[in-house]
Amino acid sequence: MASISSFLAPNLYPNPRECSRIPNASAWFASGSSSSSYRTLVTFPSSSCYIRSKATFRVSAVAVEASTAAEPEAARKLYVGNIPRTMNNEELSKIFSEHGSVEKAEVMYDKYSGRSRRFAFVTMSSVEDANAAIEKLNDTEIGGRTIKVNVTEKPLTTVDTSLLQAEESTFIDSPHKVYVGNLAKTVTSDVLSKFFSEKGKVLSAKVSRVPGTSKSSGFGFVTFSSDEDVEAAIASCNNEMLEGQKIRVNRAA
Image 1 (cartoon, one colour):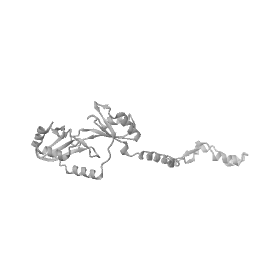
Image 2: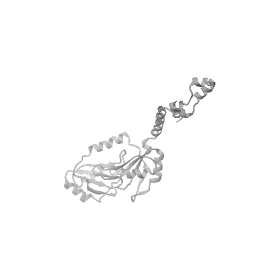
Image 3: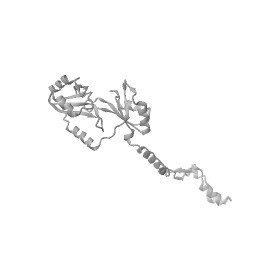
Image 4: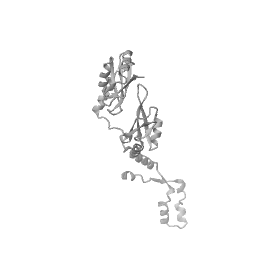
């Protein structure tokens, strides 16, 4: 910041109101005062005689912005897990603002059911604020649930991203669809599809991922060709074991 600070010395320009108090040169000399004393008065007037230029303030603003930009968003963005289903953006922001300046708070919702996915992202204004929020809020209880707060995971590589995008694009949506919850982290879209194919004609299956990562969100969707297949899947698969966990199956909204 030393190089930036050197530009912050105020550019001073005459303030007409205050500088009017400096006497006219002719009148000064006519009074018998010396030229040297006049030069001293003009060269070193009181600070109120001069005003800062707008350029100074612009440079100062750039310096502040530069210091903020120096801290990447990935280091300030927090993952907040296991939040109450009813929590919204405003409530989340209020909780985190008690421990620092909040830039953005966003609860994640399922685009099909419209229900909260029980996790969110909060971007703090600085790394210091992010660390303070983690220290104060991680493993604390909100609405009867113990939340998890940590810095977001490392972004996916280009290859991982392309694979997930391909998975998303091949998913076939349908009005005949079930929501599958409490999935084990090891369950993939293929595993989900094969499991339900034993119960009916599966059109497509998809495990939801935490945005920007390959991490499973713990739920997914399966689409069928008919409503009868949906009913059969719910009746035969709800509370069944899949990869070591008892899954929940119900009609997707």
